[in-house]
Length: 343
Ligand code: AHG
Ligand code: MN
Ligand code: MN
Ligand code: MN
Image (cartoon, rainbow, N blue to C red; front, side, top):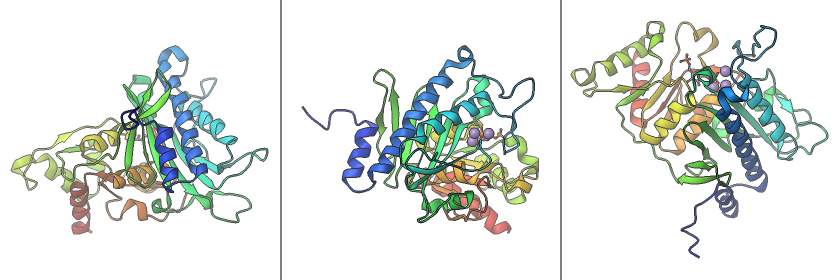
């Protein structure tokens, strides 16, 4: 049998990485458990209206509002529960944190405690679930600091450079897991017949140049001056200072927009605007911006707040928000230049 011909499953990839000493058995187990939870979420998402999982959470007409101030969707809550249950017993985690939970939760006392911290956005792009547009799950793994008796939110406040793994699962026409453990960014597609993720791209690479940008243009009048100038020049096309025409895409599911950019290039931006500026931005640093920044940098792209490399940001809060620019390296650097020249 020719071993190089058979498809590389996620399990085989992780065992090979462990054999090379790039990850240990507990991190390998953690990633497998998260991938299995994503398969369960994919099944729930795929049921749509037939599964009674659409619409808002909450009961008696009362919306269920999360710590973000957002009305939770039923699938936000269900995806969160699936990830909590899947990770409780494995012995690889010390605690978990989620977009949908005010504070981190420790592993229940009846289970062994591990040395990793898991953060996740259990369902990203929730506003799209009721209109059948791709959504996803984003996750980030940190090491739990040594000799911590009781894990608290403060132990999660590590810069993005401290991540040991990051990934997302996108629930689209196919379900795909995109993962980095710091040795490149790789894509796995769920083979539903055998129920396992199979590597379909080893080493995703983002082209350094692009002609495609992703931003919610309806916020344009609220942007800071450098962002107004930057996008104004993009829209001026080849007659303008950028000298080339640009195309625009905006899915409003970060996972879907970032997956497109990892696949064919582009720049994604959710900049500061006068509405979200008081909170520091729209997107969350710990379980949206940082995991995506790790994946993008490992694929040869760049990720910035517009004024600082994303992975260098020193977190001050579990649900801290940041402005985001990420994608094709040269385009992100151009956007950063507009901010530097303006500040
Ligand atoms: P979430 O559904 O996890 O709360 O995240 C939604 C985020 C992100 O996925 C997307 O890029 C952005 O919100 C879209 O924001 P707008 O709806 O303001 O365009
Ligand atoms: Mn949300
Ligand atoms: Mn999200
Ligand atoms: Mn979410």
